[in-house]
Length: 56
Image (cartoon, one colour):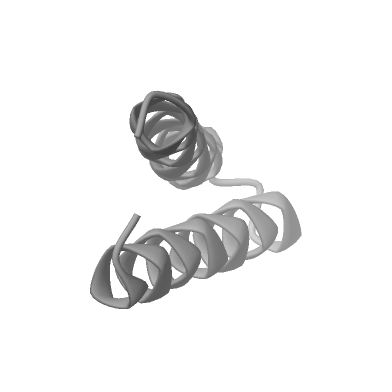
């Protein structure tokens, strides 16, 4: 996993956490779900990169 990929995944995860928190504080369920989806997507990318690294 390249450093650029790690940084992008971490940024996407943080952005998702921010959206989720903003959605919770404003009772905006759509924004909350969008934040959760961003976090899930970042976690899946991290997992995929970890699998690739394991086979190197």
